[in-house]
Image 1 (spheres, rainbow, N blue to C red):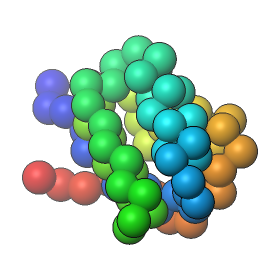
Image 2: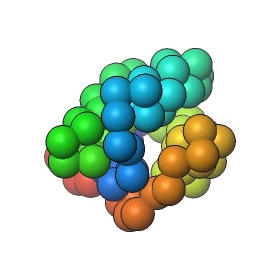
Image 3: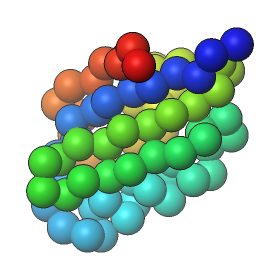
Length: 75
């Protein structure tokens, strides 16, 4: 099965914010890689087929950060 690629716009105002997002993604089983960009407020996540976009949004939402937009990206 192919990997899933997601792009989210998350309101992050400091390195602590992006660090919180990275910590929850690191713990989520099925996440293969992730990148947070504080300057653009973007989070990109690559997962295996067991992790859907809603699961990624739920986990990031637990940090208290507002998710402005989220989509699956075809690569």
